[in-house]
Image (tube, rainbow, N blue to C red; front, side):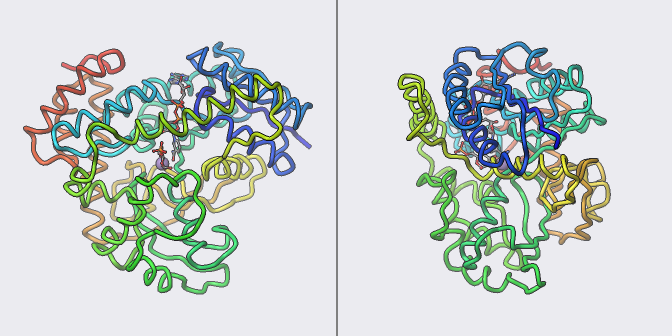
Length: 441
Ligand code: NAD
Ligand code: G6P
Ligand code: MN
């Protein structure tokens, strides 16, 4: 049986140890012969790399393991590149959140001006990794969940249209876990769903069990009262701020009560509420730096100091299992049904062919085969058209170095109240991002 070789780009990510653990746990499902970590920040990656090395030595000594900052070494002879880079690190996420908030605008990692700023940083980093992969392992697949996935996906569609890259998100997976919990089912895999939208911007239109039984009525009844608050365990979204987002779904749902929404729609439908309930001096970036980032690096240090990983566990979120499902679907041509970010090409009939949309696809060794989701209603279509235009303008601005297009992108975002405010936020973000963004004229 073939064993697969995997490079993880963003080796120093807080999610890397969870993914490595998950790869080991799923070894029987997806046998691997090698894992290589790659990062451009040597010190950060080596803290994680040293701990992973010990974990592998103890749990699967036959799997070769290395970590490097040399692209040729990292990307040669691999089958999959799992990428989760954060260009600018948490220090810049903090700016993405705090600068808009200082102007009374939503400050969020992937939505609104903060997400746009992050997109302007991520494009070059993701393209660079894709190019390394194609140079050193031309047949490999890149499974990318570097954010903001919507903008990154539009950029790779436009700039590398023939590349083997699939952009993914774990939010629908986490929400479907919640659905399963609410319904008292063992696993989200018992659900068959129809969903349409953009990344961090979509709706479930149908949820049934494998026999075709409609589960929407029961879910809607729950959501109309509790939003997505439930007792379902969700390690990744356990922080109080995430719990609040899950609760707020009650109000998000009330706007389109015939469908079930993605949690992220809160930022577009209730931006005023979000700003009022944000602490402009202590945002999610601060929360993560003081929790997940500290915990992961402290655990790694302890493993290295005691030279054993026994008794230590790295949690792996929904995206770790999702990415292994995706790699297995490609490796074994399983045609598993998964929500992915792909070019629309007619899947949503009344939406542009060249928009990157998030929809169910069957995944096999040739990649994703999107399923037709049909026509969508006027309200959702209007929201999506506005947002997809924002994402396209960001990529235009990045490619052309255009201040005007980026200002238009900010102005068009449903999170921003006016062109004037858009300009103020943009000018501050340009200053903060001068080491990362192309020069805008
Ligand atoms: P992190 O800052 O802990 O890790 C990111 C790593 O990327 C860092 O070690 C950094 O040095 C490295 N990096 C930055 N630029 C690089 C480049 N050009 N080349 C190589 N390495 C580079 O961040 P994190 O919180 O662990 O998140 C990692 C990424 O995963 C983020 O983009 C985050 O938004 C994303 N994410 C996405 C989903 C999803 O649903 N798509 C889910 C979880 C996390
Ligand atoms: C969800 C989203 C990811 C996002 C993450 C942020 O899982 O799907 O795209 O990166 O949340 O979580 P954090 O804990 O970093 O705020
Ligand atoms: Mn996501």
